Length: 128
Length: 215
Length: 259
Image 1: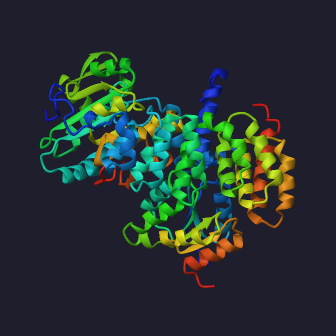
Image 2: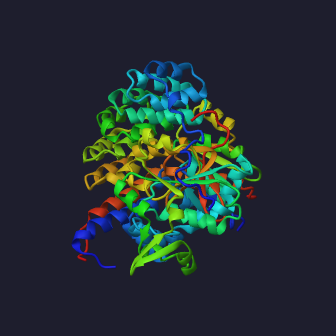
Image 3: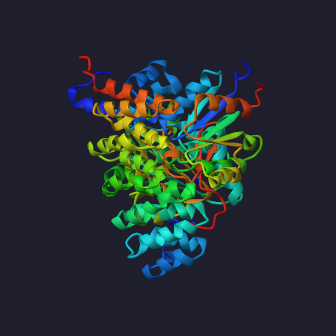
């Protein structure tokens, strides 16, 4: 399937959220790695390429928006990695903040597996 | 041998200069209006100075250098007083994710002082605050936190707050939480992540409270 | 391994640490990870039990990184004849700072072109005294090739080798509690700091304070190496991560105007 070999980094401080996303993505053929906060995400992306980053906002040490802004300042091609922000917030200012940080897409938690998988396919450029 | 003999001039390479450390009178002023270097030094010197907690929080909200901002929050953690807790708690309501993160990290590092605030925070009108308060409850010793989170789960309407509470109960919850989790699952039937989180948490609680096989 | 009941608590604590480090939700899932040796967990598990041991050339991949990458960057930043300052903290009984000295002499082609100052610090004056004496047993030397031992140590007994006076004189030993800025500051700024396997013993607040103190002791652009199971990602956002072939290290960002 087209998802095979696509690598997703799930960035969220909640273990259950990471487990949930992993389950949904792996069952559709994605390879999944995890990071607990923006700092750990920076460490992971320094060592490997990803096709998609799924990034929470509220995390210790470095929040998701700060992480995405730093990502966009890194050299290409890493800087251009697609980012899906998942957030508990749903106001227009939160959407705007995610956009300003450089996110490609934004979805409000809680997310369903179907939503996550559909968005992952779209952001990884997988045709329906 | 090229390695320096220790009798040579000690540590001359631009040490953090003791002469630059501001005195009490200058610390508050430097926090408010100093150069970046002065603000860093002032943040590092602030613990012990009266009025520092408020000055640090006010300055941190405006601070543009991430490093200096970090030093200001560390200073609030080092002060570790009810005053510093009082200055940090309102920042949990901030629209800025980095401010919320910084405040929560500082509060998390002051476990023993934060305890008395947790019950009220779990009842805060702002759902974001309730959500972050679950994290603070995680680190509190004893059984009260689990009980508070169960109480929250009985009435909480926001699925994300419930999710945060369930996440923490996976770690600190006991068998008393099981009926509460079941009722929560019923209320939020159809919310896929919550059903998942509750199921895993309940399994975990059951597994850790079942009698252990003899070694 | 077999343990008496008295050591059961110690074992449980180490396992609990590994479970937290691997975000395992249950002992069953951690045990599965251990059995599969996922992500080299067996080694992490063993290291968790032996983390108090110190010996020469421990975690030598970081020493390799020092001479392959870190010093080159520092020299490029400071100039061809600049002094290089390295800090080993905590230094315990001296294996780490002396290892750095020997490694540089053996592996850095530019070792003759730069003045190198090695400072070694610990909170415990008893271990500092032992470090100054420079007397080591077989166990401490076990990873050193025999020719290195022959070159830099003098045998003094059946299980005692003393490191050469020149090397003992090359390291400055100071007493430092890394949580106290008044004790860290006087040691000055360094190009490379080794702070391995001590932050894991601190609570969150102390860890953060120590990281901030060490930040001040770094030149902008200077590097700090933690123990290989440790990460700044759980400690402080002050540092940038740099990944090299031999090690992941952290760097104080160059060019800021504070600290």
